[in-house]
Length: 169
Image (cartoon, rainbow, N blue to C red; front, side, top):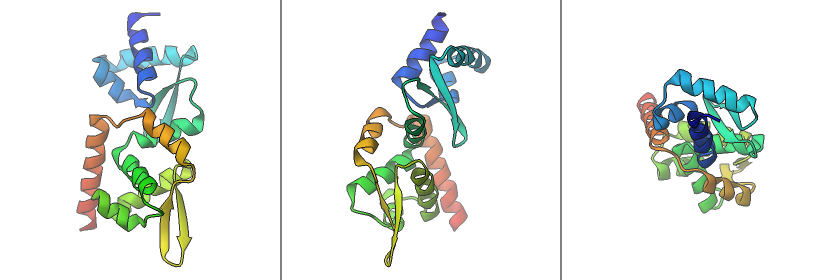
């Protein structure tokens, strides 16, 4: 295996769910060079690439599809914050989570819907409105331990939150 391909494979193994642009930036490679080696790695079954929520993320092959989608979301600071808030408080309202995380309510609702679709959250409805809950805290905690949002992920989330706030005004 070439040195560049091995560097890419190692990075994917140490940072599951890393997305394409982040690989290019962090490894200081050309986009075409990175694409070439990722095609070879995925073709050989050494890594898996999934296009999820607007980005292509790469994983070691041992991750199941449900875990891969969950990890892609948990790499986003806003999603991660929402899940942690739901883990820390008994069935919080989305409005309370929005206030706690200083996010627009629409941002919390958007991310909560994506998190619910992949099984990280549940939206429970009662006479008091919508509540957020984590259906499988052990699985969720294990995935939270797998990833930490990068600086680029955090900046993108903060920019998106800022735009949401401006649009709500």
